[in-house]
Picture 1 (tube, rainbow, N blue to C red):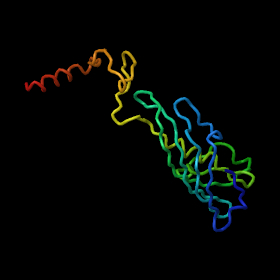
Picture 2 (picture 1 turned 90 degrees about the vertical axis):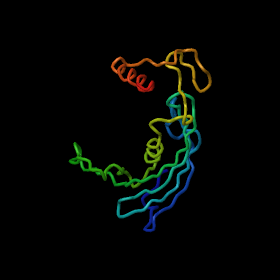
Picture 3 (picture 1 turned 135 degrees about the vertical axis):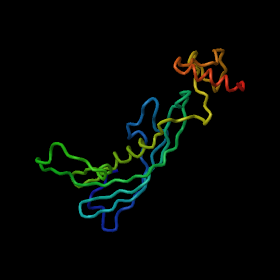
Picture 4 (picture 1 turned 180 degrees about the horizontal axis):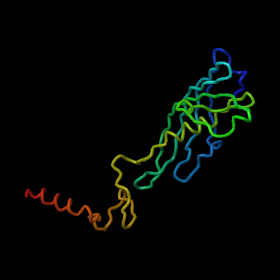
Length: 179
């Protein structure tokens, strides 16, 4: 995952490799790697600027947002980054205003390009905000806590209505009766 700047010629450098999932610290209870990571792409160089274009594929084990069951989520993410040499000028320390083009910019030191952070970001940025085990997941009962996809509970099926919305509930009943 580390390339020397000298390896990247004028025609660029293509690469393809597999990384053991244990090399990444993506191992939380609700999000962990399920299989090894496959990375492919190319590095191109213009003077001391290096440009990365590539693809990352793997699988994550996530928790369903409704019922909390585990699910497997395939990840196929595009990589894009711009590497610039570190600026060792001590006067450059302090506050700097960022531009939108700086978001994909990473810094390299000692003439070595490390793709670790770009790969990690590529994986984690594709994790869905809400992941579901199935499209019509019923979730868990808010009163007794059983998984409604697997069992039917005896709890009252009428959910508690916010008192501020009680008027709308009465209007709905009135309209459904045709009056």
